[in-house]
Length: 161
Image (cartoon, rainbow, N blue to C red; front, side, top):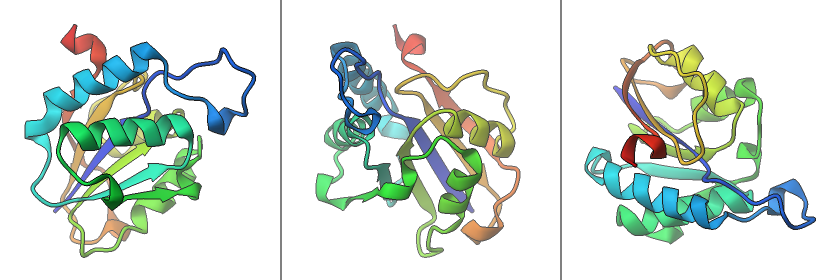
């Protein structure tokens, strides 16, 4: 069995004239990331690997989750290739996860996340919101062979307010 937790970065700011990759979180984004990460702490497996996009908004979200679910920030692997909006590229990255890890937590971006969870999960999600958490279980022993899985849990900030 393989378990994938995908988390869309929290709400980011468009106010400053920055490159997209450099946009930081808004106060609402910070609040929502704390809200969701505190709520899902009991849903996190005992052992896992954490990957995050290098984008500022994704890495800041990953750090907030790390603080609230007690995993060392230094254990987050920041991957340039996760700065993608393409679900096919996201699929390739997930399927490249070493099989030593049964549980992968990934912080990334839409449209890639919404399209991926709709292709691989069994529940249609119109849009994975910012700070959205989606947990999918695959009945596979190899990441490279994952196919349709079971969407075990979906948590959006709006569910908790």
